[in-house]
Image 1 (spheres, rainbow, N blue to C red):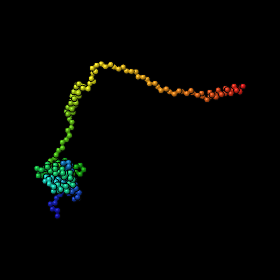
Image 2 (cartoon, rainbow, N blue to C red):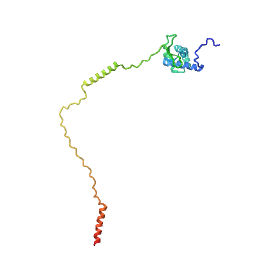
Image 3 (spheres, one colour):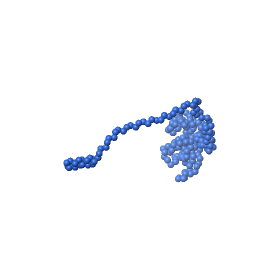
Image 4 (cartoon, one colour):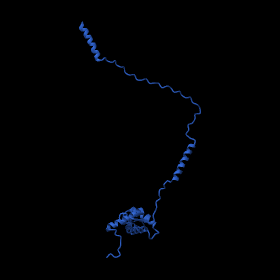
Length: 205
C-alpha cells in the first residue's frame, strides 16, 4: 500500500523523471534562475535544497555525493565554492517561485524558479547623450590645443644666403641611327614593259 507516499510523478517514468529533475537542478545552478512549470519546480525544489545543504558542509564526502547526482566536476566546484558560501547563514528558504501566468498551449501555470541569493554580474555601461557630448568637447579642446602649439618641426631658416645653382640644360641624347634604307625594287610590270620595248627593237633590226 502506498500510504503517505505523495510525489510529483509529472506523467513520466522513474528514470525519465530523475533525469528531468537533475537537468533542472543543473540549469538552476548555472543560470541562477530558470523558467518552468509550477509542478516541475515543486518537484525539483527538494533536490536543489538537498544539494545546497551538502555544499554548506564543504567536505570530501559531501562533494562525492553531489558529484554522484550532478556528474560534472566544474559544476560541483562552483556549487561548493560559490553557492554554498552564499547560503552559509541560511537554514531554509533557498529557492523561490515567481508566478508569471499560464502557458497558452496547455494552460499550465508557469513560474520563474530562482535562488534567493543571486550574485549579479556587473552590466556594461551604455553611453548616454551626456557622456557622448563630453567626449566630443574633450576631443575639440585637444585639437585646438594642438593647433595653438608652435610646431617644433618647422624648417630652420638658412643663416647665410647660399648661391642658387643654375639648372644646366639637359642634353638631348642622340637618337639611334636607323639602318640605311634599301632602295625599293621596281615592280614586275615596269620590267616587263622595258623587255617588250627591247624585243620590238630587235625584231625591227
